[in-house]
Image 1 (cartoon, rainbow, N blue to C red):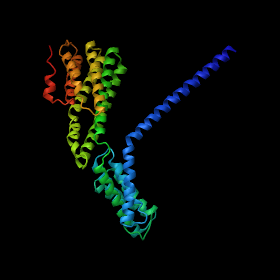
Image 2 (cartoon, rainbow, N blue to C red):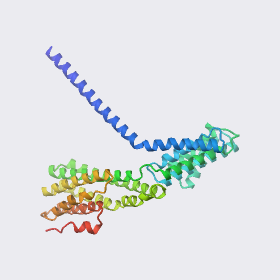
Image 3 (spheres, one colour):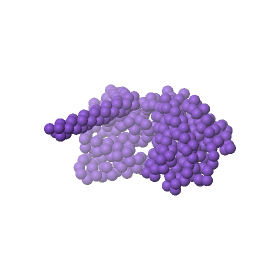
Image 4 (cartoon, rainbow, N blue to C red):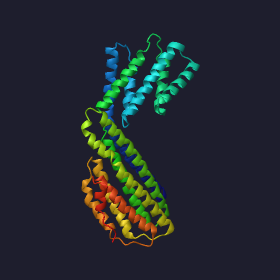
Length: 378
């Protein structure tokens, strides 16, 4: 009986643990979905309004009875510009209009059928390629050509569907130019992610050196590689934001801010490169059993905390000038460290000093000002 009661208690505890874990995951999933909706609400509103305007213009001003391709083209083009360069929207507009025009022409000349579809898709993709389109734009050209010739065949409609698509594309490009979706918020968020990734790598490297754990050391290289990918994302969204602001009538006054954000590439790239060297030398030190002073690990952790503070400031949309004192103190502390016989240890110290200089430039300082704040080694 005692054994059965004990087994039953274990079952109940297991069920409780599973239900609690499921509840936590469900709550986390709901929070994530709500946050994703919050981030996209502006795009949703823009797409809805733009689709309605495109339908109205095609239906009322040009007197098209069912201007289906106007709102469809508007949504496709506006969606392509979200988080992308405006030129991406232009490419999408070209792909959509080419596909619709080719489908209309093909329907008038050859009708529909198996061989017609095969040849139509081949010509649509080839034409989009010749116009410089990427894979996504090529596929849209093919899809729109098929939609016109198969899903909505109407031999008496002429090129009205092409006109609908042109109207939808023009309305979407106008909306994207006048009201871009968060062009300056995304670069600051991306920059914050890069710096936060640096903090994670620094902590991981310090822990690997402290524990002399080879597996942990190998993971440091993976973290450094992830930070490099985050930098590529920052470069893309910063360029997108700069292009949006340059073309927007309502955002031109923020051009200086967008340019300053794009200029973050230089210090972020420098810090990322120095971090990769630091990570590699940390791994080498662990693998070879080289002694690295504990003070170096402490400096790495202090720099990681400074990176987290920088990341929070950037995420809030602020230039992290208040982080200068913290970085300056770390730079001064590196000047008073004892050099060792270990090449890896000395390289690690040098990379910490270089990273401090790079991160000081993120606070608005130029290279020479940042370098002057870091004293020479004793």
